[in-house]
Image (cartoon, rainbow, N blue to C red):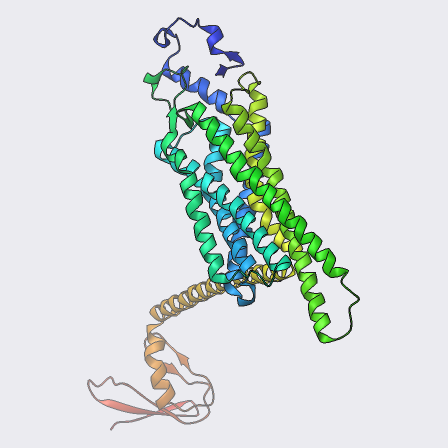
Length: 445
């Protein structure tokens, strides 16, 4: 560990105990935070990891959704591709965030259980990916080069997929057994600091043998099998092209279309295999060199950059496969467009519902304000409200009448005879006042 560019072991003699250090726990925490704070190149990797995380989750989900939604995509090869997409989806979702935090902070902060579980899931996903690619190459080889001798059904492909997962989970069991946590031997244990804790195998020699086994059995051997099968596929397709000139009948057109589809599928799968071999080669080499002790004297900055690059390539491979399907497979390209269009339509409808709800709320608020305004007007004009029904039923006039606050009416402008009822000055008697051309006439009842 270095603090402020100086190695701690150079500041204090090796025979001096940790309790004799002069730093307080607060100073230790400050030094550790300064040490683990990301550099500029690490922020670049953080941005790249975020892009891979987004593209990988979205792309692999669309692959699974497209095959599930469309029956014409439910072929044997696509079942294997869906299995590959599921493995890539799991490794990106479960492993990428933990790996990024570990590589940037150079610390495992999630406890022993997550140390074992995350590495185990990552190893299972990698093994599932390589075995699935191997199964795809063998299925394509039998379907194209030996179509009559062996035929893989959908049920057989599902059985093979189950065996792939079972074998991968069994092979990755050593990660559950031997992984443990190693705290930093420089930081005092009594300050309660979990920074710079490493998630590593308990026995490095055993881990070196295990990594050699994985490299040979699950990298070099599958690449040899896939190389052999795809070379044979290319030869068979080339011979089919040179078999003879195509005629114009329907059968020949159908065979030509099938041949073109097989060529496109073979090119797509070869591209997937090539990218897998390129992206996983650095991490296999890094594991062998690390556990063999050949990188102990390598500068720390170099080790950090190599580690981030090697692990980034693994996650990049998991995210790039759906992009290859989109560019090299017409069927997947069509389904990708349909799914993206549906997502855009769904987002548009949500925005429209939000806009309509906002408009409805604004309209309701405006109506409430109008109701309150009417209520206020009615409270300030009690006499007009009391007389309005009376005027509409008992008075017939052609000109306007003035309503006073005491309830009296002025029909001075009226030219026709009008009658109204009003309280009399004689107690409870009611008088009928007749107005004719503005002249009142009193007639007691």
